[in-house]
Amino acid sequence: MAALQKSVSSFLLGTLAASCLLLVALLVQGGAAVPISPHCRLDKSNFQQPYITNRTFMLAQEASLADNNTDVRLIGEKLFRGVNMRERCYLMKQVLNFTVEEVLLPQSDRFQPYMQEVVPFLARLSNKLSPCHIEGDDQHIQRNVQNLKDTVKKLGESGEIKAIGELDLLFMALRNACI
Image (cartoon, rainbow, N blue to C red; front, side):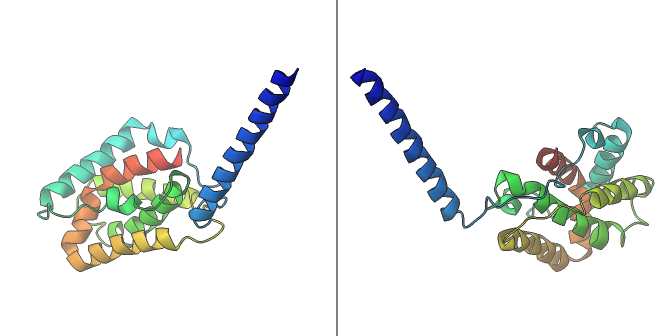
């Protein structure tokens, strides 16, 4: 009987300690684990359409042939720095909105016929993610997105072409973060 009480007591103490550690971890993150809108999801079927997937990758490939700046990566490790997994769909929503509005629409006359099919597809994804938001502080995400925007703007037209050339990476990052 004493052994059973000691076992239960150890279990409860362990559970209490684990709960305290989890609470401390959340506090250290500065509230980064604040609830995320349930609208930060896309249906898997959006990424299982072979035709539009192929067109997106073909557009990226064609633009990357015109991209002469191989030193800069827009969608990579730096973009996700400091952003936890649960916040990545929100981050990618911000990147998608910028890409559609500030890059693809102004460049819509280039890279035909792919552009005329890919832009409406990405605009629909953007629209589906419009209710996606984070309840709480998103400054770390906004900072990363602003760095991406600043890089594209600093590079000018070649930055826009680079962003188009990374549409395949955007597509994959959206899929990984939002389904």
